[in-house]
Image (cartoon, rainbow, N blue to C red; front, side):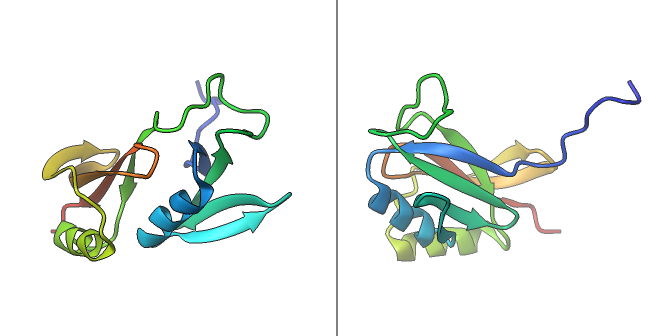
Length: 131
């Protein structure tokens, strides 16, 4: 299929949250930048992506069929080493649930640690193996 659409990258995804302030603080501790856009909507920017936050009590439309806090499981790629990631998380008071462990990312081997955000979403933070 020569004329097939080709997806380039993820631009943003949405998390449904119970407590906007707690969620913003958690992701800011991971190094993301809080932003407000549109009609007082909240998001967290990092790299060339962002996470939009919708409050569980009033999700923006359109939205997922069943927007539910704590139902996400996603992986974030960090620059540097996993040891630096672990040290940063410990300084920020973020509990590491599992890791470090070797996994397979979109571009090959990654080393990952897992933690949970205030809603219980599973957040995998990974580094591509340093050569």
